[in-house]
Length: 138
Ligand code: UDP
Ligand code: MG
Image 1: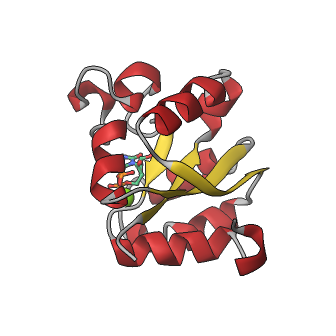
Image 2: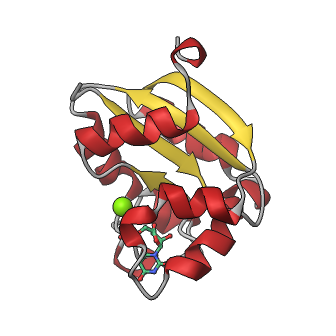
């Protein structure tokens, strides 16, 4: 791989009506959408997705938050996708996110931070497979 990443528009950003603006930023930054869906996950499913953070103090709150409302999950393609997408969304904590990034513009807090972005090619693959079958990708 190396050219794909996985994202979610998180419950706060979806509920606040920012999905269109965020997708517009993603497309204008040169990413193409390979798969996309609107869905709601359970706290258990969020727990599976974020299993790597199981021992962290924010884990339970994060799982409840991620299941609190609809999200949009998508697979994105671009050269250097993982790093370029992390740059587009900005730091985890919006207080530290650079001007013009998705999280600077739309995140409410370090938890409700508008979007997810994979942190490696390997995790992009694992996360995409968590949400999408082969048939659901163009
Ligand atoms: N998170 C949180 N508190 C923290 C750190 C992270 O609530 O102190 C949440 C936040 O929603 C973040 C997610 O947990 O996006 C996953 O954390 P990670 O460190 O992987 O940040 P990311 O890769 O999303 O920037
Ligand atoms: Mg992460």
